[in-house]
Image 1: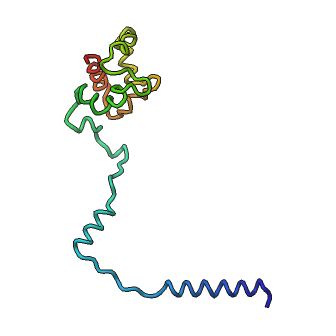
Image 2: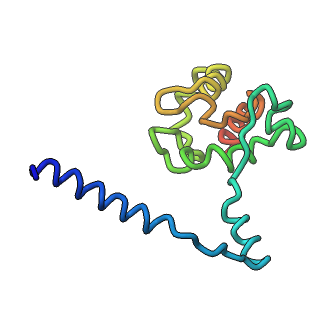
Image 3: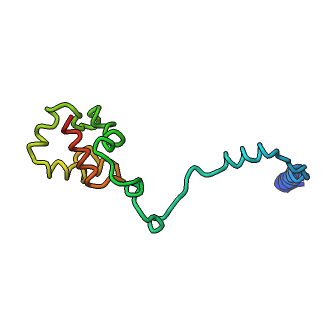
Amino acid sequence: MKPAKLMAISSAFIVALVLGACSGEKEEVELSDQQESAMVERLAPDGEVALASEVSAAPAASSGGSRSGEEVYNTKCTACHATGAAGAPKTGVADDWTDRIAKGMDVLYASAISGLNGMPPKGLCMDCSDDELKAAVDHMLAQ
C-alpha cells in the first residue's frame, strides 16, 4: 500500500472512532426547581436593546424632570473637575476659572455643551439637557 493511501485510511478510521464515541446516548439531566431558577437567572441578559424609534422620551425627562446643577455635577462632572483630569478646571480653584469667566458665561456654557480641548461634548453626559449642563456650570462656579 502506498503511504498516502495508508494515511487516508488511518485518518478515516480515527475520525469514525471519535464520532462513534461522541454519539452515544446520554441520560437527560434532571434539575431541581432551585437549580432551574438559578440557571435561568445566570443566563438572563443584563439589559435590553431598544431602537431610537421605540423610545418615547429621554431618560432625564422620564425621571421626573430636570436634575439640579449639583446633582449633575456630583454624578457626571466631578470625576474630572474635582481632580483636574485632562486639564479640566478644578472646582473651587478660582485661578482655574478666571480666564474662562472673563470670556463670558455664554462662551462658558457653549464650551460645556459642545466640548473644548480635552472635554468631550456635554462631558459625555448625553442624557443631560443644555439647561442641566448650564446649572452644573453655575454650581461649579458657586464653589
